[in-house]
Length: 177
Image (cartoon, rainbow, N blue to C red):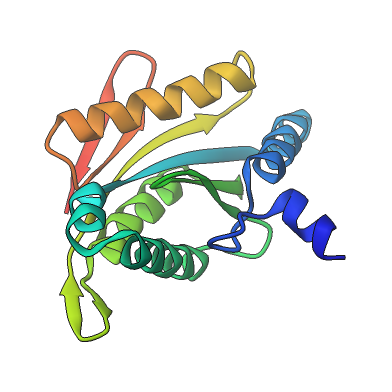
């Protein structure tokens, strides 16, 4: 049973790992046949490296566990939060009715992950940048969907971090808290 769990979960955070995320991406793709829209949110922690270097890897690991707990608190049943590796995470929102839902969740992620972390009496502040890509009937393939989320994340980080940006083919819409 434990081996099965480890095959689909990150050992540090307990979140889904890349294998389980890939399965959810496939499910989202299959949902397009039924006109179901999904969103992929890529999340990268801001200032995590500095905190990890300053306080050590044990504290860094504890921060990642707290981040995972906060992300799980933002998911609906059927959605999935995953750790991609390092300080990168992803969230798949299935069956969204309106793209603004994805943007709202992304903004909540930025706000929630930016709250200070109290670790052994030490307040540690990091932040988060989020890139969002929608999977719609016009989407080309899963690889393009992933690249769009990554591009939106890169744009959010380039625009000053602690932001959420949605990828759109000819324009990027930005929201800052």
